[in-house]
Image 1: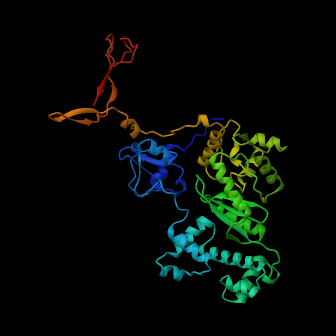
Image 2: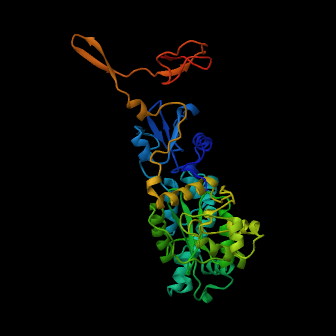
Image 3: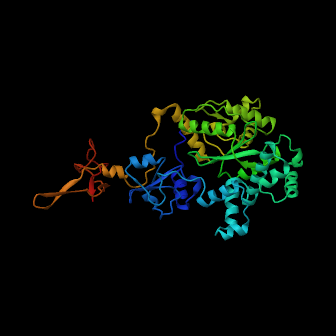
Length: 427
């Protein structure tokens, strides 16, 4: 297979830098040789020209190249998963507060912007997020043995009848007959490829997707329809285990996940997902090969469709399926993530081949290259010398002179003649 490369293309990264695309925050850092500063892709500072920027995969590489951290975007500090106002709202909801649009406006917040943010991050509007949290809290209280009146009022419902009607609409049974119903719990987990949303049932992980995937809202809606349960923020033993194993995977020390899974889908889809789990760490298979192993050699297209429907990214490694010629085909999280994951696994198996400084250079020498030049001194007074950096020197070709011997600046071994070029230096 061809080298997937550690970073997206230069054009993709430069466009993300100019547009301040938050989906790329943490994937790369932009270094500006003219200022000696490196930034996040979302930095609010004025953007450099295309010829004055280069990209690295980590902040450590930028520091080793001689760049200093930007004071505006602070790339050495961990990025927050949510802005401060969103963290405050989530804390109030978890504390049992019920916030209306009027209360949000009184706090100087825009309900429409909050609605858009929560829909993008959780697949729910802010009001639906509050309802889901209240219902999940009430269900936990009922399972703990609390009576229906107390569970409803303590969860933020204003009346017993309102709680009973909302519960029956959500689960199809009144709260007194809830039995052993349990809500789905969701948690956001930070990764080097941006945060993922993990959802788990009592039996195992049922969803793991990148937060910026467009199909996330649809997947959450299908999940609620499948289980007929609300999805609320929280954690359980499966999410805790998944979080620990993801950390080990991205450190390069975990080769196979063993966290329990709770998969839906058709019989054919589950069969394909089961074969994906068997692909060894750091290896790839083609769609046609996967179809042959499934006993349907002509169903490569159906295999690709089942691959795209995989609800549990990374753990069920659909990124290890490639074209017959080794080319990278579609990936729900983006082809740049697929390249990153394949390169990460390959480097974990063969650390000696890892690129130490995958910098995308454009037009100018790096800060480290310029700093490596030996300074020369000039006199400024009796007995005083001040080191001065030499001006940038570049080599320019001049018109060849037939029959004329080349100058001392020519490449060793060149002879005069009709193909001989004389080189001169220009300051």
